[in-house]
Image 1 (cartoon, rainbow, N blue to C red):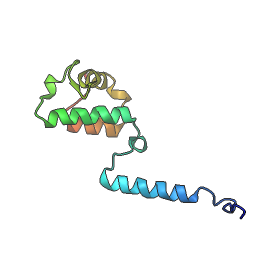
Image 2: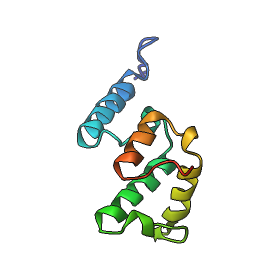
Image 3: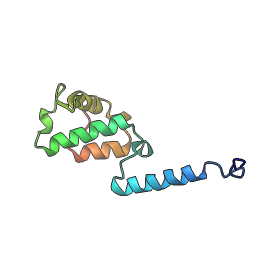
Length: 106
């Protein structure tokens, strides 16, 4: 029995549709699941989430200095970098950090 191939132009449509459905399902659970669509990296998103977790656990923002870690990541060092390079962040990143009380180090 010969192997049938999909008609030209139709190959890959099934995987594409599945990927689109999966992306929609993930977005319904967490709109930030794919930070690339938001304009920043997974690394940035991870450090932002770790900072939010620290603050949510009761850590004061003033106590998050270089050397303060979460899951082995130096959140304090990253925070200092974000403050220093504030003008390199997009408006949404600045807004989100601002909601946590983080502002530009002038």
